[in-house]
Length: 119
Image (cartoon, rainbow, N blue to C red):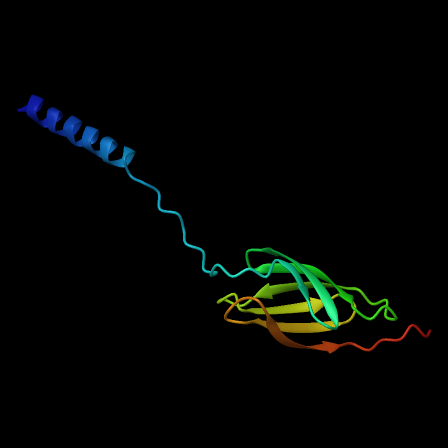
């Protein structure tokens, strides 16, 4: 009887080890869709060069107006669906951009913090 009990424990233990050895890890799904803001975006006013790391976006904007020497840095995060970028413009304001459904354009608005170099 003791031999049968010990054999049952060993058999159960072996089956457990075999089953867990074949278990496949399922990778966690990303909550962000496959939308990408990375790249260079150009319109009549500015050229934005953006880099994306999951939900974080950084970049630089350069004015098309050569009389303005006003490049700006931006740091932002994407909405859950990845279509909206909410960014802070370093030293100059905020920016909200919404990616089009075809992912080749965006619309947006922003604020400019007025500051003066006068002391």
